[in-house]
Length: 477
Image 1 (cartoon, rainbow, N blue to C red):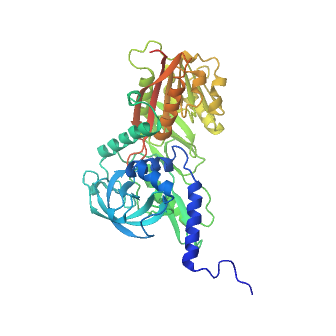
Image 2: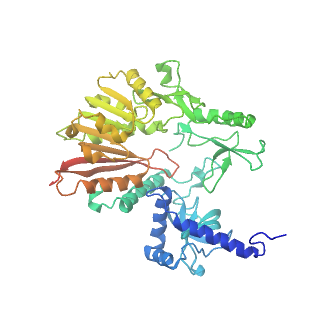
Image 3: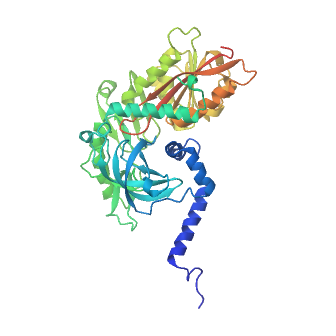
């Protein structure tokens, strides 16, 4: 009877071949530009130095970790990634500069970690112990959830997020430096559930994605999510139990959206309820404006800051002393009409476009509810890249546009661009390219980055929303 291929090979040789095959595969992979892995790679380059990395890549040793699998080490955290993870450097005794990614660790701390995965010039680690805490970052009394570690003082969070915005533009925009000018807030959360590998319905994790690795962290029925609104938390335990009791047949996703009471508008101003079906209608109020949208569709889920955000955009479009005020507004990827409707009173005509026909239906309904005539505001389903073909009657020199990203702005040249983005790194890249295009010879107008502001729509997380305002000026100015 013949032997299978590799049967006589020692186990160590087979493991080495598997490792080399994996490295060969990883070498061919390039992270998406400005995606999470690319942003993390730039942080690693900053830590280790480009010269060190170039040397390792040239030698073909960029995947040769100085750590064994599951090895434990005591290291000092030197900086934070944009993702919020700590970055530590391998001890000198290892003889090779290597980055370690450590969740829930802060600059200046000495921590004990266990290596569990290796990639190009870095390893991911579990945090085992904080040997020496940095009390400027770590306030254990602020931890409100045993499943996460929201211990950063809020003022420190804001400073970190500001640094993320600044670094994003320094790294990705390629612009000259002279050109770059708290809790219970979340109204939508999406719990997940995960069966065990044995598909045992009694062994199911119901909760949220594990920040330190794959899988779902099981959240107890009695637990509350400290960043979710009260009405969300009141429903969370009940929804979790419902999934657990019906796991063998359950197939409906569980976005929990805080909605206005449907009794009447007066009661809705002060009453919040939780919606647990992703096809249910949800109502929200932003200032004096009311919105209704599908529970499974996108709507900014920190209602408490939306009025501030929309007011900032309005004030940025109409700064003090502006002579030629925009009269027309284009809202791309408009969703249920948040920006177009809240800013409607400041424009003569507004046009919104959105890929989702369902969202457009709600946007039209919201305009009617807020008593904005269809002669003033219109919404249409379609690709935002074709929006300028649909607003040929809009005078570009008197038009403001809210967009993400500004791919075809150069062909239309609106007077003002408000670029709202949840990815400040791709925003920096896009704006750098846009400003460069309008500097080309023969261009009579060019854009300048007039203002840049980060908004903390998601406190206690690493995410930061960024709003950039671009203004069209004479090329010679």
